[in-house]
Image (cartoon, rainbow, N blue to C red):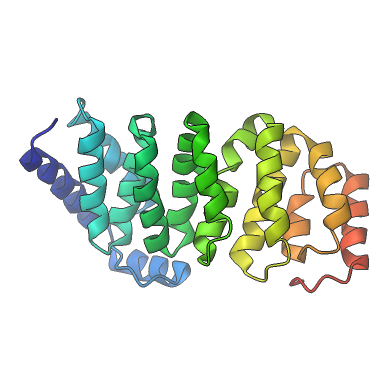
Length: 253
């Protein structure tokens, strides 16, 4: 393990680099765009990526306990840029994570309160962890009915990577079980997450998406249907949009 003093130094270097790279104008614009209560330094995503990459060179022998210390320290301060860096560390070292670390990821998701942090934690970190440790699917089942819509969104997005790659039927069955229960929710971020996963699945297996969405198009929102059908063949796209309109959905236009 790396000494705690060295880990603190790594975090301080990351913080200093992000502060130096930020601008007040970008900080204000990002805060307004994300509608976040967090503080912002105003560093760009490429700068955050580069900063974490440089920090990784200073900790080549990083182990799981070291990773957990670094991300906890970065996340502790309510600063968006630091928390993005924490997510970047988790993505970079995701293969070090173990099933017990899902509790930490869940806490971060609950505290994030913005898609910019939630989505990579859900799709890239949680999704990878569940693929490696399939018994964690029961935790996603719990997330899918959680009162916090960010946690429910995360259950959906944790299915994204395997569906984007191969349209895995077992993963699609799990995703659609969650999506079917949430299909008539009015929360925009739930509707958008369902649409996003369906859209990406359609690139690999369009008929899988058509078969599932056809009998449900009238229940879904316009946000969900329009995004989900984007990569389908024109005839299927038009048929599903007609089914949506005929269903009298209460979704937003």
